[in-house]
Every structure is written in structure tokens, then in C-alpha cells.
Length: 424
Ligand code: HSE
Figure (spheres, rainbow, N blue to C red):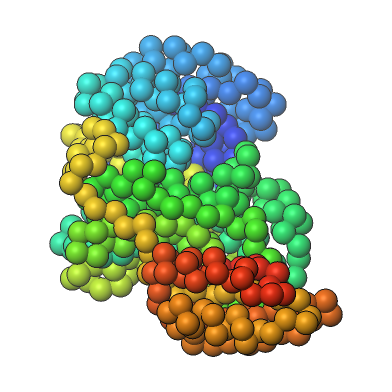
């Protein structure tokens, strides 16, 4: 039986989950995959954690050289997150001919090309299924399940923390801070949850996924990003009245070679599949020109779900005789011949607040006069102000922004309080 040594860099949430799966399912993997995966070394300074998981102390250290110089280790799985020391350790591993498996979306999104240079040098592989959508095998689907398609769009809920927070706020009226704390306690959030709530995590994932889907590098600086930290519970409520659910969506589209990639809070219709994705669950919808729409759903975060994707990559890497890298120019982040769209065309939810004495119709008339077609207008008189909730038809950002900038000329207008895109 083929025996393949594995090193685990870090035994945090996902590292621990991976170790548990490798131990619990070792015999099953031997029987059905024909490979015996042995954990030869663990880099971890928390010995208590190692003890808790039953890791033999003799294979634990904090020195990467114990991994690099061990010829039994063919695969290095990284769980540190962030850029350093993960980047240096993984590049050294690749150069030493060891394939890498990682859940580190920030590293892949920012330094994929550098990892590939090292992989070519060491004739090793780079596997990162766990970096996007946790346990959901979306990367394998894009690379190996849709080769016969031109992929037109990829759209999904790719961050468990924000989906957990938005679901909690919508279902129970919980406030943002409490919902975030719970997501952290459950192990979904990044070490610094700003990466989750401000949409960075989702933008890393979208950069990776849309590069694979559209077979061209979609660098991070071409991905627009807006998080959920400014979302107000009243807009979630008004959205509900209009039959919509709020989600943080990652959206990539390739329209006749022009690419748009954006992450932002988005209203989806209650009847849509994405509206039904709750809690830490993730889902991704992909549209190919041959297959039409497919959808994958599952846990996007957590120890065992993400560990599932890591172990799948470890098995895959262990069985590969020749590692392949991306099939597009991935040696640099510079993309010369690719057009990206930034002036997006979307429908929108708008909430403009005005003082009690102001005339809401003046707001509506001004927007209409400047080319904003409104499909729904509701006036909400409150104790100290009036909220005007409006839905626009599809409109270019530049045109809408221009109209919105003129609102301050109307007396009594407090201002635009929410502008949320709608996807159907
Ligand atoms: N913080 C991430 C999330 C973990 O909440 O989705 C999985 O990438």
C-alpha cells in the first residue's frame, strides 16, 4: 500500500478537525483510496491542544525544518491563516518538492502566482479546495466538472460568519454584536472578524473562484468589496415586507469577455434558492453555457467541514502522479488584455430619510427626473422622521449615484440611509 507522510502546520480549529478526520477515517481511506496517510509532523506551540487531540508529542515542534528535512513528508497542510509565516513555509515546502494543501484564501488570492513559481520549481502541487466555501467541493467542480462549459456566472454565499449574523438578525432580531460573538464562539469567524464582516474573506474567495471559473486571473484589486457592518436591522425588516432576504453575496459574471466581480450585501427574492441558505451554511450557483445552472450547498466553515475539504485534497494530492497548475496565465497579477466592469448595472433597494416637515414626493420626483425608474415606493412615517423605501429598476451605478448626489438640494432631506443591490 502506498504510504504518504503528511505534516500539519497548526492545530487550530481546522487543523484539529483535519487531524481528527485523518485519524478516524484512516482505515476507510486505506481501503477505498489505496493510500495510507500518516501524520509525520505537526507544527504547534500549544502542547495542551496537541494533548487534547491525542497527538504524540514526539512529532510536535515549532521548527519548519523538521518538516522540510523529513523525506517521508510529501504533503504539507497549512492552517496558520494570514500571510506570514504561511507564505514562506509553503514556498519552501513546494521548492522542496512537497505538495501543499491549504485553506488560506488570503494567501492564495494574493500570492497564488508566487506559489506556482515555487511549485514548478519543486514539481509539486498546490491544492486549496478548503480555501473557498469550506466543505463544499466547488473548486473541484469548476476545474474537473465543468470543462465543457464557458462559465457565465458564479454567485454565492461564501462566508459563513456573515451568513450566520444576517440569518440571526433576520430570524430573531438579534443585534449585530451578539450575532457576531456567537459566530466567533462557534469557530466560524476569522481570527480578526473584520475580514469576515467587511467582506475581505468573501473577496479573496471570489478572486479565486472567478479566476477558475473564467479561466483568467481576476486579481483581488478587480474585486469590489462592501461588508455588512453598516447593515441596519430596519432595512432587513423593510426588505422582508417586500419579499426579499438580505445576504452577503459574492458575484462574478463574464458577459462576452467583460468580467465583473463584486462582494456586497444583496437582497434576493425569498423564493430564490440562496434565500433558503441559513446560518453558517454556504451555497454557490454556477451557470455554464452547456449545463445551465448548477448549485452546491453545504457548510462553509468549521473544523470538520473544512477539514473534509483538506483531507479530500490530501488524498487527491497523494494519488496524483503529475501535478497540474492553473490553466491560465498566473505568473503575475497583471492582466493586460482583459476588460473588467466597475460601473455595475443592478436593481437597488434605497432608503432615504427625511425630516417630519419635508415632502417625500420631492425625493421621488427628483430621482425620477434624473432617470431613476422606481418599481416600488413606500413611505414609512416614524416618530421623528419619515423613511422612503424605494426599489429601482436596473440602472448603472454612475447614473444612480448622480441622482442620489442631488438629494441634498431638497429641503428637509436627512440623506440616503441604505442602498442595497438586488439580484434575481
Ligand atoms: N471565516 C470564514 C467564514 C471561514 O466565516 O466563512 C471559512 O472560510
